[in-house]
Image (tube, rainbow, N blue to C red; front, side, top):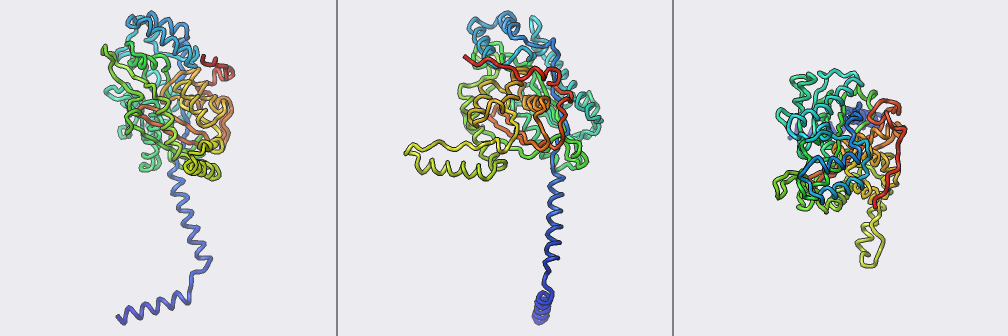
Amino acid sequence: MDLFTDFSLQSSCFFTEAPISLTHFLTVSTIILVLFYYAFRFNSVYLLDYSCYRPPDSLRAVIPYFMEYIETGNNKFGRDSIDFQTKVIERSGIGDEASVPITLHQMPADFTLKPTKEETEEILFTIIKDLLSKRNINPKSIDILVSNCSLFCPTPSITAMVVNRFGFRSNIKSFNLSGMGCSAGMLSISLVKDLLRVHKNSMALVLSLEAITPNVYKGKNKSMLVPNTIFRMGGAAILLSNRKQDRRKAKYKLQHLVRTHMGSDDRAYHSIFQQQDEEGFVGVSLSRALLHVAANALKTNLSELGSLVLPYSEQLQFGWSVIRQKLWATRGQKQTYVPNFKKAFEHFCIHAGGRAVIDAVEDNLKLEKEDGEASRMTLYRFGNTSSSSVWYELCYLEAKGKMKKGDRVWQLAFGSGFKSNSAVWKCISDIDPKERNAWSDRIHRYPVDIPSMH
């Protein structure tokens, strides 16, 4: 005990005689902060570039022709089914340039495995080749490969098709996501983000598409006929990296990614549902509650995203309005304050799932028509391309010269399950609007006036 007592007294004298100086404290604090800075910086996810599929003009589904095809190309459709699909197409907000696979230009159409694989390969091989050549990337330098396609899941997988075609390395980490709907593109980005935390100094390739060929519904159920009218051919390839040397070459940096899954609620779970009808035909049913379900999912998603991106002034106003409404709800007080998300983002990429979806998001968030321009024009020119639609919208913003260095863009996607997913990117480079992309051939024609619904 004497030894410890003596040591304690000596230590006490040492600290009394030689206290830590302010200079030493500041030096140590600075070193710690620098270490934290570099630790988080090197965990950043950079978007080097991306490419969206632009179908040839020969695949355009000109609306009058498309409606004629519906009427004559499938003798299973009765008059009621034909009239219903015609009405939906006319009100869809989709124009004459949106395209469908070659088999839907033929009579009789072939919905078998062969044309489905041909559609998938045509889209993916085209955009991958374009993306890798734009950035002069050797396929063997890709470390992670992720694909998402909801309703076409072949064996070997879609990622295996790509590995075989481009000769990726044998130790590539590949993942094939299916059944996740139109929000799957954001899920793929989320998966890559998590993988890049573990695998340092890596590049990842994400592939987002939906195959149209095998998913044409041939029955009479109206809720299952809607997808026939709004989905079109498309896909996107996205190149991501966490390598510090890629920061200077990257277009965007990932700021936030928020995922919301409402599958525990039965109404949400069944709002977009693949099933058989009474005659045995398989299709995807869109319920009447879909917009209500989407609004609830968006509200839940924004409750988390808002705390990450909104200024404190907006958060305080929202919080006070909630408290006020709960305290004086019976006195007819004002509705809950809707935060101004234009203070958090310069640009919005709302999933082009349909005209009603875009309208609903704009109304709920009190956005201007200009904020939804990229989404409306994407829907008009390319149709609903499922998980890749938000990338066509980003393409549009770039081609119009709207994207500036330092701007923040919000990608919002909805999908079966029901899911609402958000990704926030910050532009970290000077974007050249003349750079070739899916819009560059006809961007001078847009925006166009789209007739309102009657």
